[in-house]
Image (tube, rainbow, N blue to C red; front, side, top):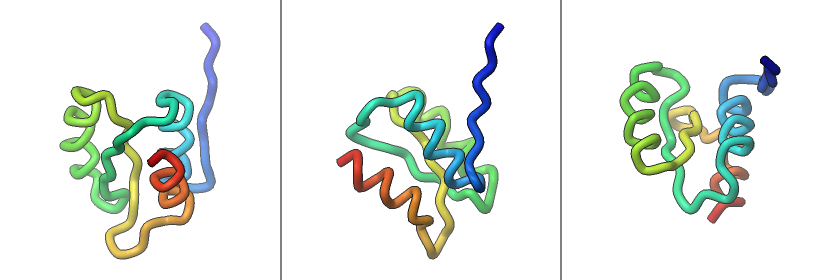
Length: 74
């Protein structure tokens, strides 16, 4: 089997790279905390059910790569 490793500079960039590879121009996205892992675990089933990508963010400071992804897919 062929494996395609997806890795960004940090978990925030990696979440965007995964979302970009799996979803083409989504109209919605789920944003979960990248600081507390249960947030993404709870949000992932919702995102999957709706067909939305899930990206990670910080509580008080959205990383630029996440902001560009969200704003670029409006």
